[in-house]
Length: 88
Image (cartoon, rainbow, N blue to C red; front, side):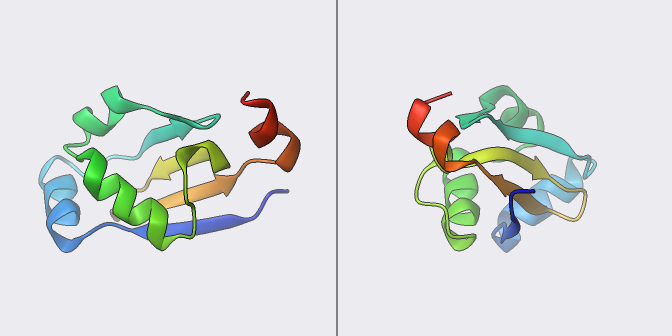
């Protein structure tokens, strides 16, 4: 299994997420940012980028799956080397 890592949102982004109901949502799928879900979760792309970088990911393309948890933390699953280089 690919390793799981977590990224913390800024305290401002966490408050917005909790005010918005704090529901789980998929924010990255197969290396693609799910902008509609970010908007539904009241999360800006800059807040997401901070969480991504704090979890050790330079680009969204390195991520197979990103789940915004009800706690406000984002759980990431790293893409396999082959998948990331294929651009799939």
